[in-house]
Image (cartoon, rainbow, N blue to C red; front, side):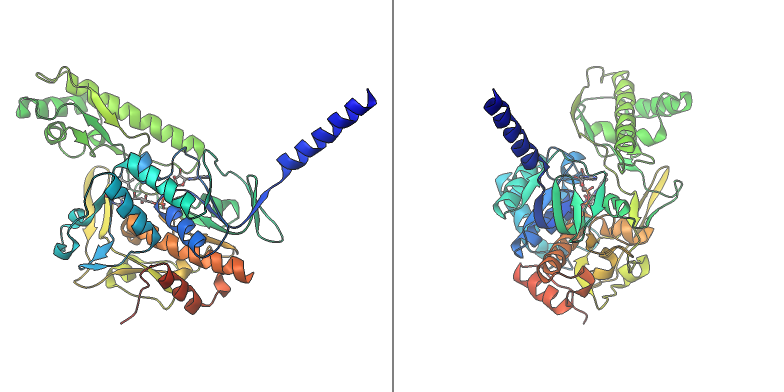
Length: 432
Ligand SMILES: Cc1cc2nc3c(=O)[nH]c(=O)nc-3n(C[C@H](O)[C@H](O)[C@H](O)COP(=O)(O)OP(=O)(O)OC[C@H]3O[C@@H](n4cnc5c(N)ncnc54)[C@H](O)[C@@H]3O)c2cc1C
């Protein structure tokens, strides 16, 4: 009897020891969107033992969850500005999805959408996951980080220990948990989100003028909101939906805000569908496809050692600690008004300095992607996916070197960072 209970006790101790054990990594990346993919691939390729934690069941972030499948921009002025492991992964996803790359040698200044790389989100997510695993990145899916702890050697989060953290959550959520300051554009200026859904209305006959008149009447009666379809209802129906539904004040920075935003997205979609089905000739229209989440353009940005301004971004200023390029116009969406668009002059390209990825006052951490330290205008441009991949790669390499050298990311010699970045195929900004 005694020996049975002793054996039971020993197994319980073993079980608790095993369960309580935290795995240790050089670099942990939180968030599996464009920035997180770039960061984890670059850290792993630079020799760091790397993990990536993602709250969703799939890798991909906004690209996959919100079906934002046109990835911009790897090229500027017909030259490649974002290359390296994330670019290789995107090319593989395009090939496996049976798609093709744009002809970048014909890239035109004002036709930026034609230079975006279109991916199939399901294929993209699978290829991204395979690429990360092949690179040696350990993936933790369905895990949302809501608390972190400082340790002597770095950080403790979920069941992991790490030396360096890369926050690629899009909201600087992890940086905030570490005490970093964040800023949020006031409600009346913040960009709306968009909910992508498709209708089986393509090719159906209907009376355009009547539908437009009915839509305006439905707005007056409060049956639909003007933002439910902001691109012209007849056009939206004719193209079978897709983008065109704004969700003002969309926010996914907390579980509660995310749930509320997605609820409002579904309500907007259902209002539009109910309206469409009341129109002559469109009675049998159904929702043929729908994103799983509302796409969120803007929430929090971290306050970094440096902040990228709209002016510097458009002027193509290349700071001495610039580590990645970024090219897109200032593209500020507004619910109820047309977007504010500002373009670079010929030959100019924005740059992301290391200082904008370093949360002020917080060590052993970098923030990459949409939440990088930038003003509202610059952020509306550099949030695009290829730019996020580029800064992710830069953050991943800095984190890997800091972990290897046992120092803070601020102390890693920039020349070593640039050398390592070149080795993984990243295009490093030059000031000429
Ligand atoms: C409607 C819309 C249209 C757009 N159009 C374009 C376009 O045409 N071309 C283009 O290139 N870009 C476009 N963008 C911009 C682009 O999609 C995003 O800015 C970009 O995806 C941001 O990348 P990210 O990696 O910083 O963040 P995200 O893509 O948001 O990824 C962040 C990831 O972190 C995860 N996460 C968040 N918090 C936690 C946590 N606490 N724990 C664990 N995981 C967490 C999320 O689930 C997510 O997977 C558009 C964006 C929107 C919303």
